[in-house]
Structure formats: structure tokens, C-alpha cells
Length: 224
Image (cartoon, rainbow, N blue to C red; front, side):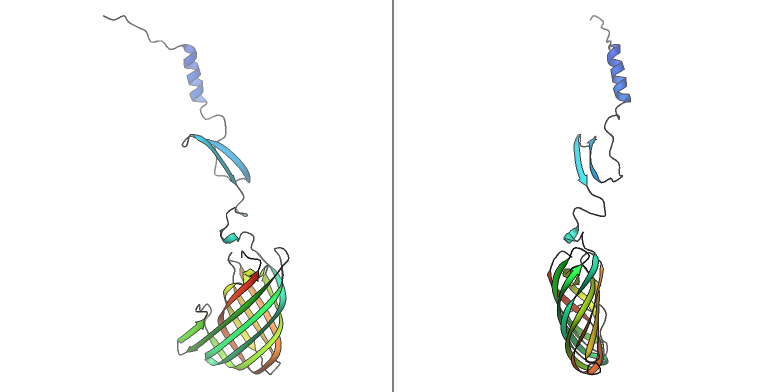
């Protein structure tokens, strides 16, 4: 036979254990899904360690792709020179090209330059474009050739927002007033709608209109 033993747990230990269980969730507040600008830390029961995190509000993301978090529209103005030629009756062919330089505001004052151009041809449901993207279709009317210099305005806050493919609509009054106007539209890397308008005076013959996709390269502040 073995002597009987009474397994007795001290009353004080029982009380302490009950108190610990009752207050197991007290102490540091648990993290929630509510975002507040700044820093937070919390004890994680899953990781069993200390978590540390920092973040900013969604309107100013820390890791914005393509460095586009500061891209926004603004205003730009400058000088430009270009040339165009069109021949068609709906179907037809046309080309245009221009260069320009200016100053931009709305995201800090800065300067930049661009070179833009496009060409296309169409006949009976077939066509080709340079660049190959055909964003707005192709349309050619009239017979004209001209060149000139003038000014441009845009809602871009820096030249890089003009970069890439975009639609261009050009009307050349040729020898009627020796002037031409072009409207261009597209989006920048952040998805902002960007437009520009130019008007030039020079020399020309005839009158005509063309609608093609242009490709623009830029020099200046990047990121947008």
C-alpha cells in the first residue's frame, strides 16, 4: 500500500490564475482595421511577438507605382513649330510632326520639351498607322501641306505627362489664313487626362483635316 496524498493547490495560486484568465485581453489595445496616420504597435497572439508598422494615408501612398504619387494636372505654355500634310475624302493619308518647349506649373515650376508625330493611311476598311496604335481611328479630308510656328497650352504640370500615345486632331487652313491648329489628348502614367492645344502660323497650300494617333517623347522632369 502507498500512503495517500492530498493534492492541494494553494488558494492564493487559484485566485491569481482566475484573475489572469479574466484579464487576459487587457493591456495593450489590439490592432483594428481603422487607419490613422502615424505609427502603431501591437502584441500578436499568432506571431507571439512584437509587430511594428508605419503607414501614411491612402491619399499619399508610400510605395506608389512608377513614382506617380505626385502627378497631377496643372498648366503649361510654350512655343512650338511643326508641319503637316493631308490628302483624302474620309479615306486617305496624312502625317504631322511638331516640337516644342515650355514652362509648366501646378506641381512646382519646371521646364521641359517635347517632340511629337504621327501618320496614317486608310482605304476601304483597311489602314496603317505610325505609331501602330490606332486609338481614335483614322480620318483624312481635303488636300493641304503646311508648316509654321506658334504657341501651345496644356493642362500638364510637367512635360513628361505629354509622353506616350495620344489622339491628335489637326486642321490646317493652308493658304486661307496660313495657319493650323491641333488638339491632342491622352493620359499620363498616373491616369490623369492630359490635353494640349497648339496654333501655328506659317506657310501652306490648300486646306485639310486629319485625325491620327501621335507618339510623343519628352525631356524634363520625369515620373509622370
